[in-house]
Length: 202
Image (cartoon, rainbow, N blue to C red):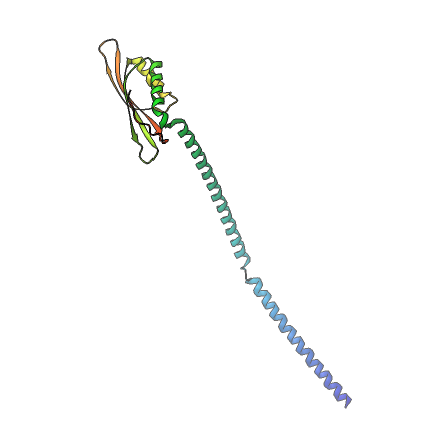
């Protein structure tokens, strides 16, 4: 009887060992299968796919950096342009409250330095399209002098610190003395400063 019991116990132990060995083999096979699946098809993508995504991200970062640099350069140019525009306006656009007196004084200075005689002058304003505070001051005047003095007058106007634009010129030579009668129209840009100044004639 004890011999039969020992035989039964030994057989049971062998069956248990085989069972757990089988279970272990199955578990190892499943784990190996999972490992192989994760190696060949990882959830985040294969190595080639990850490398491609990384390269694409680097390219997008480089493109964004280039756009940022371009925008910065444009912003700097706009700032410089705005500053230069403001400097130009402050230097050459005459405030309306002093425009007439300043233009008259400058023309008289040029006429005196060049030796031409100024006759009657007429001033008139006209608005500049697209602006709300700028207008053109038209100065039409008659002058008399020699050809050389007229050239000197035009040269003085060209080098004037004030922005005087030559809009029209008509010349009539005289029969005696080599004198020339001229009619010249200058234009100056004036800025409305709320002074309410009006046109005058000299």
